[in-house]
Image (cartoon, rainbow, N blue to C red):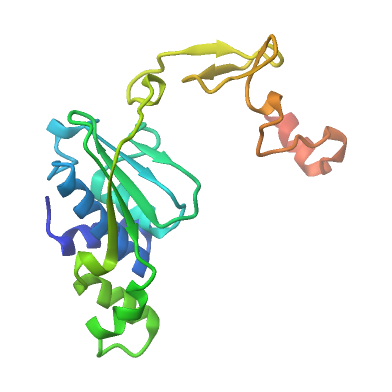
Amino acid sequence: MKSFQELLKESVSAHGHICAGQVLGVRMAILGCHLVGIENPKDKLFRKKLIVYVEIDRCATDAIASVTGCQLGKRTMKFKDFGINAATFVNLDTRIAYRIISTENSREYAHQYAPEETTLRQQQIVGYQHMPDSLLFDVQRVQISLPENDMPGPPKHHTICDCCGQIVRDGKEIQCGNETLCRPCSDKSYFKIIDPQELSQSAVNFLNSRGL
């Protein structure tokens, strides 16, 4: 694996700016990969051998993706919307898994590791680079249940929604009585469809120009 500074530079370039979350994410990924025995996750020998569960949609997640090469589209990154700055690293060969949580009290120690910095933001950015893992993170050895439908690779299961006819992949359908439904049709949706009559004329014209 590359050095911390090299990995941080790559992550910042992909993310767009330096921040404490970037530092934490890079260090979390380095530690997680080491704990599960994958020293170079981007090497072709380890492709699709590592799965990372991330628990927050913030800066650290981008850093973890940068270091590990794990991505949602590759099914090697899983998002659990817990709002916790934590990630679990799983070696698919050995099934060894560790969950790493960013400690809240690390903020209190940041100034001790960056006394030359005058703002809290810079103290965290610099201090987190030098702080020992024992202050930055809590580490848990965990066991992960990995259903076949969640594994990397082509979809292993397809079904058709009885209501709208949409194909649902990877076992994500909902059984409602005798009906098999996609999640939107089962009222487990994140969106509400707007009546076409409520669309602006410009939106209607644009959709019509696209044959939609």
